[in-house]
Image 1 (cartoon, rainbow, N blue to C red):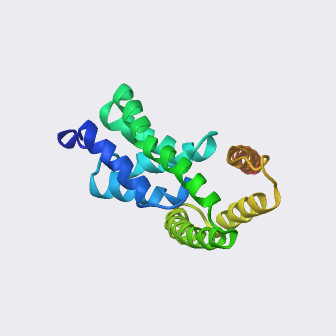
Image 2: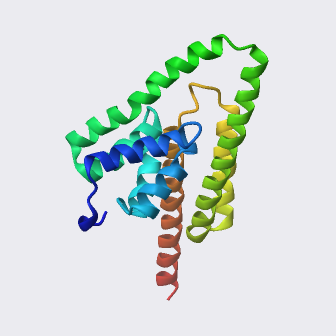
Length: 201
């Protein structure tokens, strides 16, 4: 965040309302909108901070959008104001959710299905674009075999492990353990070869 562009309380409140009202869905579906406003346009947080926050909010329990908005708010205007502005920002959505709940109960079920499909289409498009961006970033850091292995494992875990057991943090722990064991074995093999070369010489 640039110190000379520190936002006001109401600027952050407007950011939360804007980011959440113009987007559809939850979780990672809103992350591209939050990034566009907080990172690209306002430059309140850095790209690195945003990427780290995405990883953390997907690992810990709770709604990732609220966690991300809280992170941006606290990072820009402090802990106390950040928590207050986040609560004020999500209050209209709580009231709207109650209103929609009662309104949808009065509609025929076929119209609810139409709304459901429309919203899912938008969410799917946002997630594909968001995933494509991180795919291009990961290819610069990882070789294709490692990337494909991680992708296949994550995809299988998401599709075949039922809720509530498909916790994202389990994937992270499994990957960390696998990489640790792999690097440990690789290091031991390298050291053994080095010792053998020293003995032969």
